[in-house]
Image 1 (cartoon, helix red, strand yellow):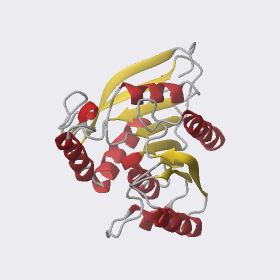
Image 2 (tube, one colour):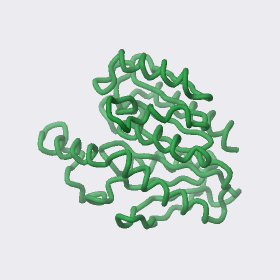
Image 3 (cartoon, one colour):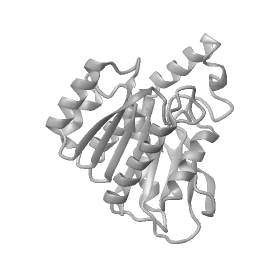
Length: 254
């Protein structure tokens, strides 16, 4: 994130029906009240890389929350898998995918209710429309929360999101017409999780059903391109991703 900005950081707990979501919060030390943004993590879960991204976002003038969506099964350093081992050890990869699959839209939509209540009662932030940004597994959640809490979110972005359009009864795309937030969906050009046909279908469906919608495919990228510690990191595209986030939230949250 941008050096020279002094940040206030805390680790807090947000109570839900299933326990306590351990959550990282970060904001500039002065200049509030700030618009609030929730970062929905990717499947490798909470780590310093994600906190750095939260700090960079906060340095643009936001109050940022990074909740541990896997709190039901573990915390950082104590998940059922170790991210550093998923590429050479199949058991860790399988455990990560199982944890992701078990963390259903229904559970995250339920958790978001408590995160929103926390924000509604938080001093020093603006309460008239929140932002959300998600990566990888959280694409589905971004679409689900934007349709479920359409009166709460003003802008939402997903990068290489998965399971946005499935054949399940509760597929996130079915709520597209309820979304009033400005929705931005970005995808990698080559992504084994989202094929070309899925991209076409997603674009067609949301263009037709969501009022304020934009979709973009980042050329020459693979899944995970925005994360500096991933082998698929693409610096140019990662910086475009930051620029898009900045424009979206600047325009619709401030």
